[in-house]
Amino acid sequence: RALAGAVAGFGLGREDFLAIIDGMETDASPALRIADMDALALYCDRVASAVGRLSNRIFGVDDATGGKIAGSLGSALQLTNILRDLQEDAGLDRLYLPADLLAAHGIGNKDPAAVLAHPRLPEVCERIAAIAGDRFAEAQSLLAQCDRRQMRPAIVMMATYRRIFDKLLRRGWKRLAEPVKLSRAEKLWLALRHGLL
Image 1 (cartoon, rainbow, N blue to C red):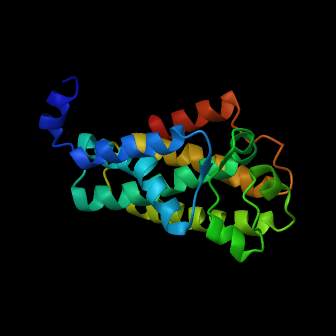
Image 2 (cartoon, one colour):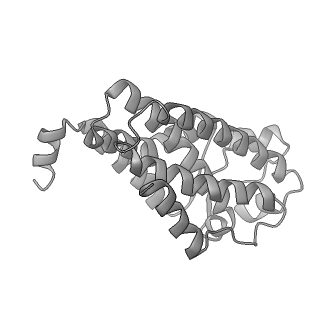
């Protein structure tokens, strides 16, 4: 009922709301493992890209362009979250790195702590980071074709997460206990630069 006006006014898709709920159900499970790269892509679509598709409708972006942006940017943001939160998620018995990718690098153990301690984990993280980097590049190219004012929230999100992603790349994948976050000054600068200018 609370959403009925917005759904009708902006033509919001029921399937995107259901996708978000499916993603929340995945995150609510007591223990979490991702089977393969396809399952990871589906998870990213549900928890991030579906939100983007709904947002883009509200921003007034056409479905063809908005769908592509939501797919690329949602994937980039969620993969960044996964790489940033490896240690925290492992403590909650959650492992978002897909089992097929881990196995391809000789990591067969399903225990998150053991996975994070494996000497070949950096190779897995580098592969996920390469995908995220490609998705950021796709999103940036697509957003450059849009009205900047119309897509300002998406641009601010991309700039913020790109800064976190770059910090993760500089830190690397052998010091996972070292947190990566933005300072208050960085957040303010990004908001001013991309949100107002």
